[in-house]
Length: 155
View 1 (cartoon, rainbow, N blue to C red):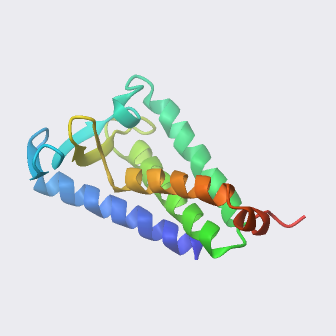
View 2 (cartoon, rainbow, N blue to C red):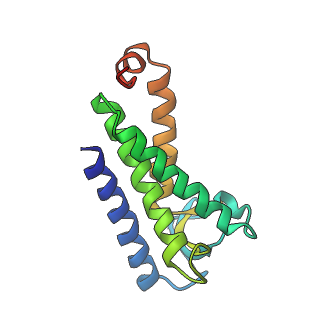
View 3 (tube, rainbow, N blue to C red):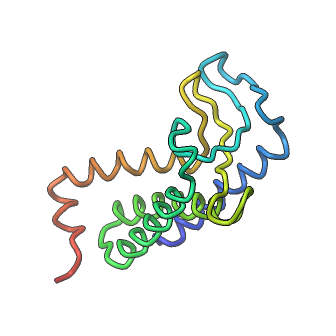
C-alpha cells in the first residue's frame, strides 16, 4: 500500500509538472485567487524559497537519502496511518530525485519544475504539498502515544 501511494504521488507530481510546462509560459503569472494564489512556471535549481541555488548536487544527495529512508520505513511500517504518510513523503522524494537526475541542465543538477505561486512568498509544486503535509502528519503521529507504540519496527 505504501508503495502504491508513493507511486501515485510521484505520477501526480510529474503529470502536473508536464502540464505546467506545456500550458504555462515561463515566468508569466496566471492569477487564480488574485495575488494570493496563482500559476507561474519556473525552474528551481535550489530548495524551498530558492535557497542554495549553487548547491543543486547537495539537494540531489538529500533526495536520494530521503528515498532510501522512505524505503527503509516502508519495510517496517505497521499501521495504516504511517503507511499513508511514508507513501506520501516517499513519492514526493522520488519525484524530486527524478527531476534532479533527469532534467536539465545536467544529471544530478536538474532543476525542479515549480508552478504553484503562493502570493509573493514562494512557488512550489504538488510534491512540495505532500512533503509539507507529510511532515505535519509525522509530527502528529509521533506525538500520538497509540500510533507511536504501534509504528515501531519489530525487534
